[in-house]
Length: 385
Image 1 (cartoon, rainbow, N blue to C red):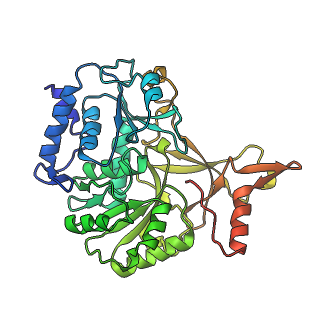
Image 2 (image 1 turned 90 degrees about the horizontal axis):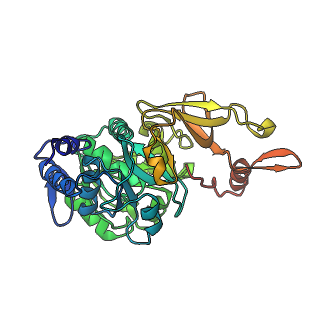
Image 3 (image 1 turned 120 degrees about the vertical axis):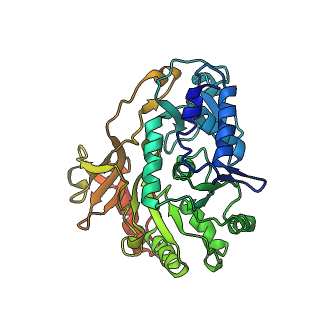
């Protein structure tokens, strides 16, 4: 077994050898056991440095395969389990024996934000992964005592970030493909002492309809929310529920192009500032750029949100030749319209693409929808964030 594989197996595995790293209904692997499984799988990949296409489920085999690809320095392209991935395999030469001209820092390929079935991918480096994992672990205060439920798919950047951040902090992940609407999900959480789970706005709809507010979860420390803008009244309601039950709600903002996270709302502010995305993650920074041709269509102080930090992607890929390219970006233009409030917190006000021109006037469709919904008592319309 090469010394390089042994060294690179530690890229995200930062726990003490005897501590639990991955927990399933069938078994618990310590960090030492997981590292050995990763090294064995990495050695099986062989010397050729091609792209590994991994149909990633919330299971132990997928976790080992993902970490093994990183250890073998073979870029891993994560896809949902099942389905026809023939086009991706062909376009990126993603086969076990595949060979390609690959940049040495390239680690991960993920579908772009908001795309479905698109061959356009986000290129992420080893530094992107480790930097974002460390930032998330820092602002969540992760320790070896934490155990996160895998409540989101691992092929989704948000779900993957839960795995990365916990392993980098020496914490554990409880693997399950159960829904939060399934009673068995909560049985698993209670049995293994889950301290957190992650959700998108739809997750909270499911929680509302499955009796979550009445559950006793003494080990729960926090819930995270991202993957879209959640109505402020829902944020406020869950923040209040958490305060009464002893856990925090952490609202977060991110994009695949930033590996995962760019901002978070400190839990103490969730009840009073539920409309805000909060502050940049450790190591990250925001600024606003003017929107060309906006004219009078934007409110004062609103511009396009631009992010800088070590988790900004290397760039996009649309074919295998793009995989040889190095980092091409120093900042990420998010496409989101935002402002910084007087208290220093950042707020998303819409999307650049959500504008129209009528009789030469630039119209903010998100603003109109929000005002109409508010006047009708429906709350704000959700937008991808």
